[in-house]
Image 1 (cartoon, rainbow, N blue to C red):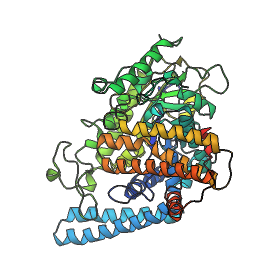
Image 2: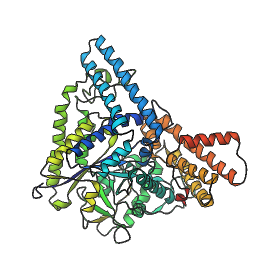
Image 3: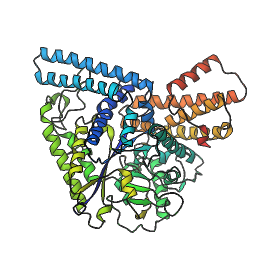
Image 4: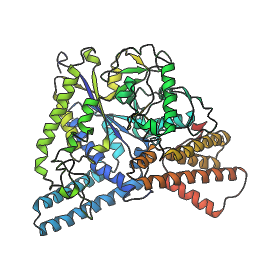
Length: 575
């Protein structure tokens, strides 16, 4: 690359996450989520990253894999279920071929053959090329320098609303430790769940009846403690916007949280607050500079490029030629229809035609890269070597929701590598190339609807937070009381910690609020809550020298077998 032509750097940040579903149902909610994502997203992305690496391409890829997802993909139970799932999808495709040919629906029969070949190829890659080790395959790509993998909180807990600093620290610590276990190195970056951040200030939970609260540490304190160099935020957090919308007027608890966050932010003004903040450069987080440890950098989402994908009105996935996500063929679940029109009813969807998507992908990829080049070329107030565009997305959007999206990413990566104006970069490269950066203080918020906590804390989910906060206090007290014990007490205490981590998952509130799988989310939340209470009672009983009953022993064993993630979890993390 001729650096005289370069206008800046670019990276995709892909956030890969699914809640813990092993042994918690199959269809329509449960294991099928994991199998769909593995076959439609994770393995196809591995193919792309591996192919580009073998061709010597410099890839602008920073991919997050949450600890709870890594634990599931590495679990023998997933590997067994996934192979059964792939065989089922092939059988369904074979039946569809026969059915469509009988009815002379040749275009749909052609697509059915595509699905048969697709799942045969995925199975062959999984069994033979990857050795049934998806996580190991991604770790190998990172070791070769093809991609960068970042971590997240253990079970994707919504950190700003967790009730204790011990709970926040344990989510982050387990995230770092699990990353080391699977990838053999320290993580450089982290995806904060839901891009949700909270600075330090006197915090009072809306569920605290006494309303006393306590002085909380900012999330950056724990990130620096465990060696994290950067995280990603939405643009409105960087600029200090008030994107809360109308939600504060509807829910008093949310208003209380907002008032606390706003007063904490205003009261502690940062020395550089008058600088004009932009998502096209790195900033250091105030409080992480000048002390022990490296400063922590902020990578901010570029809204202009992100809207090209996210927008329901004119985003690329809504192109009429692409495969429609919602309409599926019974009983196998394969898809044979195209988007047609983003507003079209399912009955009005046209038949999918494989040969018509390549031209659309090429055009969309070219359009996206041209926007990146244009946006960067306009940032005259930032030195070229410090300019960047960061485009973060949920990984599962590509391949699963937007089937052609993985191919679109590949085309974009190729064009970025070939562009004389762009330097493909990984997240840590954007940070490590800096000698200095402006220091800013961030307000509280997330990338969720309204920019604050509404999706996770509202009238439909408020009841969950009282339970979470009470469990967190119980866990900290139990860890202090029994953390030095060995044998059975320590094992029960560790399982108590696993149930708390699963209870804290932000997925339950998200699914309740969006109503996409509300019954399943409420069932899961209540199950982990009840199991936590049972284990806590059992712990007290055993510590008092009482014998457990046969029924108690059977239930305990079932919980341990079902929720077996984080095998090396140390309950002293909560002390």
